[in-house]
Image (cartoon, protein in one colour):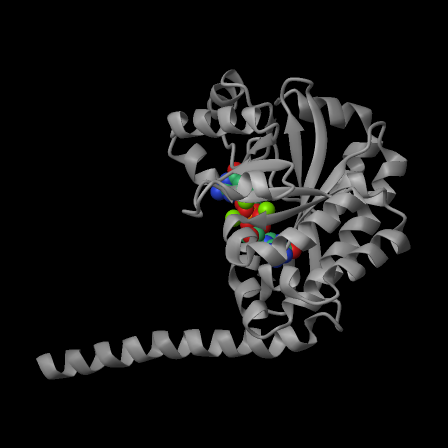
Length: 281
Ligand code: C2E
Ligand code: MG
Ligand code: MG
Ligand code: MG
């Protein structure tokens, strides 16, 4: 009987592994055609200033509309990086976000920036700067409304190369944000070497209420003349605490999850919706 049971466990275990392998294969195969078949979509999450009570920008976040359901970037971005698809996908993300934001410039009373996540593979790619420049020209988006987000590890992986690329982006007028700041275990000296505009405090610090660290990041940002955005604000209480220590720009489920562009658009077109939304700030 024990033997039987053991055997079942092994079968069950194998089943789990083979499900994972199958899913991985499905993603790998699907990723090859996903761009051509226009299966990617961008969602946008508002970034809110709780002092001026305004939406200042949005972060563009990719999703994959697959026959098996909407797939999260947490599941496929790394695979796309490993398979080398990320450069083309990233270019699509940049172009789509710029076109979208340019269109919103015409609707909103105030201009929003759009913040786009970059993979380190894009930074390392020859011709990346040229391709970004071409997208800006083609979409006629004023570069100051484009922010790019990179992680600390991407910034310092090859600091010399990053420096050249980021300096060029910066001289074009594009703003550079450090995403998930505080979790990269890297030396802080890169903050003075690279042309960085904004630190995005990792949502982990907010979730676990590590106020001393959040305070220190805000103080450091202030003394380096950098902007700060707190990520992952989920409650009014968190909003208050973070606001009261001097950080006014935030994003998180408290305000809104990432939503389809039509939702952002309906807010831009409807003043009542817009001001009711901002009551949350
Ligand atoms: P990220 O850039 O740090 O984006 C923030 C993530 O936190 C998003 O997850 C967002 O939906 C989620 N989030 C926002 N507010 C809250 C909150 O209040 N609570 C919680 N629990 N989560 C919140 P998402 O969309 O699943 O994206 C995950 C990661 O995938 C992103 O993290 C980013 O690193 C990567 N990613 C997304 N889009 C792209 C892209 O276009 N290109 C690249 N290279 N990476 C992307
Ligand atoms: Mg991000
Ligand atoms: Mg982040
Ligand atoms: Mg993250």
